[in-house]
Length: 184
Image (cartoon, rainbow, N blue to C red; front, side, top):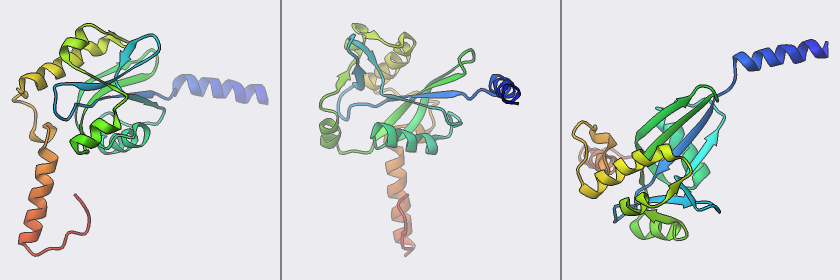
């Protein structure tokens, strides 16, 4: 009986293997064209990241935002995902998200005072743990360095949009004499 259950379990796991989700965060510096990066003992660099075994679709920003905030201790909004790729052989999904922090400038710099802020020039001279991330990071840094946001990017995927939308909603509620019960 135990052998039969073990065989059934192996067959089930083979056909219904759970996927691993790897979420990587591009978190920009508040005042400079740099992003937060971490390094290991071998001096290879990587984006802040988490890996979970729960079924979360890469476009479920609300759930992913909560996971990122909880696991990385970063209060941020997800603007968009910059890159998404599946490794079907390993049952893994890798997604790089561009975040907008919810800190005051001084708070953010203080929170990550022991981390490294990497600019485009530094990126060219460092070794990445995941070399496939280099072009995505490079594209993002080039965009923020030049201050030219892609025309096709929707407004809600642009820095500052959520804050502006929240302020507008609050103003409209006030003008209509409605009481705001919860934050937007």
